[in-house]
Image (tube, rainbow, N blue to C red):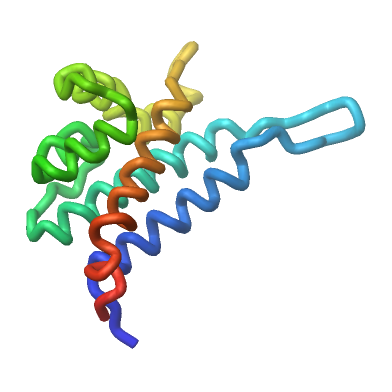
Length: 149
């Protein structure tokens, strides 16, 4: 069966989000030691978010560059999508939200190559919430486009 591009992108995003969810909690190494695979958790959440944004852009008939600039993708969304995601994130000021998104523009590169950086930090709760809000917007507003083959 041949699926639409939006559905392929959405399915890939769901896969990366699933992988992120599997690694988001500490894993027992021994009875008293735990290992938390934070790097793959962050990388997979940001990949999922990027793909959810690209899925929306595809549904909206918009082209996007093959880069990882989340703020660029968000700004390219139609006003309804921006407002809905913003509301789900409980932001009332679009400029504050855009500034927060810009903070995570380089997360994929930085965390994929974390060994090149000293003391990198990220608001992982915002990353997860943004990812899940974008997915929820797609499901609530565009499920028909996703289900088209």
